[in-house]
Image 1 (tube, one colour):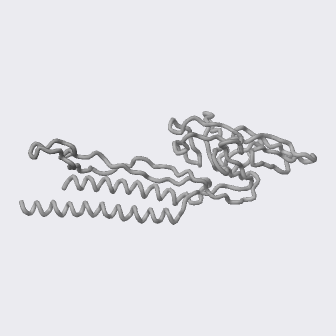
Image 2 (image 1 turned 135 degrees about the vertical axis):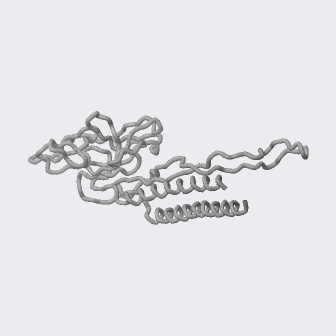
Image 3 (image 1 turned 30 degrees about the vertical axis):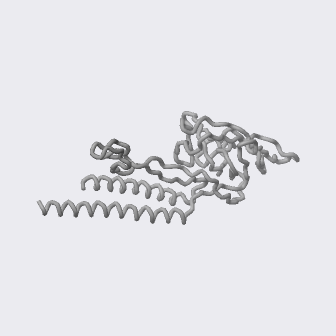
Length: 263
């Protein structure tokens, strides 16, 4: 009976993790370029009372099916779903959405490490550099001249500025994207930023629109890929699983109480 309680307890803890992941997905329903997550589980070690394929000395035969009792469940991973979110038009010339594969490169102070993001809600710093909402410089660094009246970014990441008093626009920089062999292996830093890990592999840098890289859409932002109907359904399923594990503990307790009364 004690084993049943321990097994059910692992199930309750697993569903608690599941609910936390779902809650985070729902909380980030309107977060720009957010990628929903899914908790994945594995069964724990098994207690073997009779091994399948063993030789039975009593009947001189091979045991076709053994007796193995599981010891519960554990969280194996919280997997990130990397499907593309929808593109929402904003009309802001410094809002840039990635259509397809790739991440923007972001320079993080104070140690100067490179982080990655799909959140293209960019702004200008006091010195005219293109930066994130937190002031991190987009790489490679691009500075917009002070007398610029319009900024144009094409699907291939070329940035042009229309300078006051000039007829033709001036090319001021080239946005680049980074891709990874395993996007799901990137570490989550918060602030819509990711960090390279051994699991993600080394980044490949290239211009948007070239082979294996997505294109850019000026005046758009990528929305979260969270499906609220799916999340609510998953929440109900997790709640029912939690209740069932709780019922197992209650039933085991009742059975132990009955045994104590017999004794």
